[in-house]
Image (cartoon, rainbow, N blue to C red; front, top):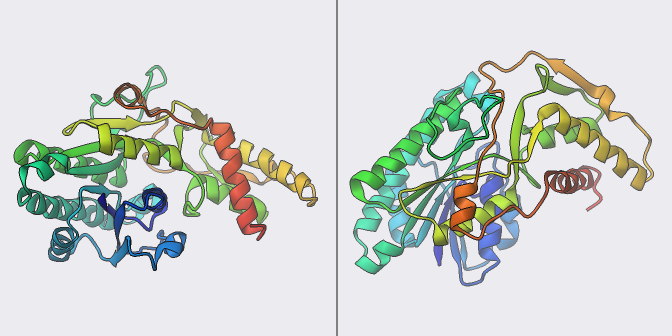
Length: 338
């Protein structure tokens, strides 16, 4: 299978590529513009392999994207490339408009131009998988069970608004042109190699360095957490079994407050300190509450009933086991224990 992954040097994209390349029958083209959040070293072991290809390119360059897609002749496109940090979208929304909306438009046009030239069999087997976020649904009330695919889109930040706009483009390219598209909305991802601006690696690194653990507001914002490898398994299932024109939520229902997560990180770091004979330290004393983020959504819970009913997918990890494994990975990395 020939697969294009956009944003493949990012957190989720690099894990997807590693999984795809574990099957020697797959050939992967990674298209990434290499922003501050990219980590190309994660894929360095594949650089000399004939079934891995990398192109540094911004999706805003429509002509180049069009040529790349046509030349590579993919069976599947996984579109993950996006600016994704909410705080940065508040500070500088224009980057999010270009990357997440214009970039998605250019990729859709490239995919459409390529797909329309295929024979009927290849047309039917082609898939465009657009990876979005549960944040497009906005804030979830305390009495709601969770986000379902038929809920109204109601984004709160420039980031989530730009992703919602790209979702609408994908839906329109399916409805208008017949391009075989599937949209996914995932909950908060975590795991190894995530950029340090995200909650779990940020708090873990700050704690190890005995730096402040800044908590927005009261820290009681609730999120549904999904291990990145469980997310990858869902994407691969949908590429094979998902229905074109449909959207699928990918979540676990493992709801946690930000403050509870930080407490767990502190607990796991204390256990690791004891394991490696390091100085005993109460990491919870580093917790400090700061002014809340503007437009901060209070609660996300993502229901994946549709996904689980239509495929074999279900999460393989509990949140506690996944977080403990993740904290240990960062601990080993930053203490050079790997």
